[in-house]
Image (cartoon, rainbow, N blue to C red; front, side, top):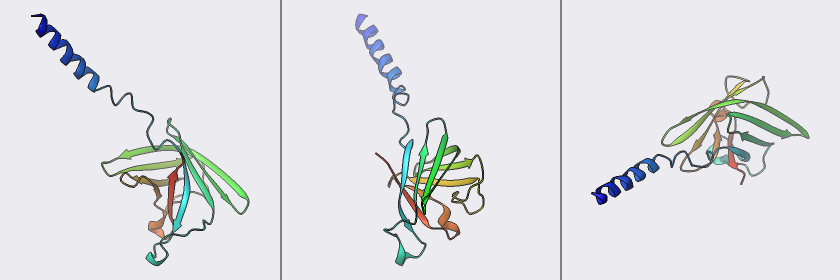
Length: 143
């Protein structure tokens, strides 16, 4: 009888611990600073440009706020807002909403909303501005 009780206790502890793994994971891997590393165009012959036209970064915070900073021609602009995340098996998509209009918002339709995504198998952050003739923008997470 003691063996059955011990067996039940062991099984119970294994089952109850298996659900804790998700709770003890470190902060999501997308939190932190992402730096613009590549620019390109839709033209395959000019797929990436080694010289960036500007410096840019996003910082994603765990409380669903973010900031975006662009340095161009000696001027630095920083804007911020909130973001939501949609996760699928293949990618993480970010929907950003800025607190005010800005020319550094990389969007086809709005100066206050922007979409970005991470392809899980690659791990880089990509802008969606290229679907409307903007440059292809690729960001890597700062370590």
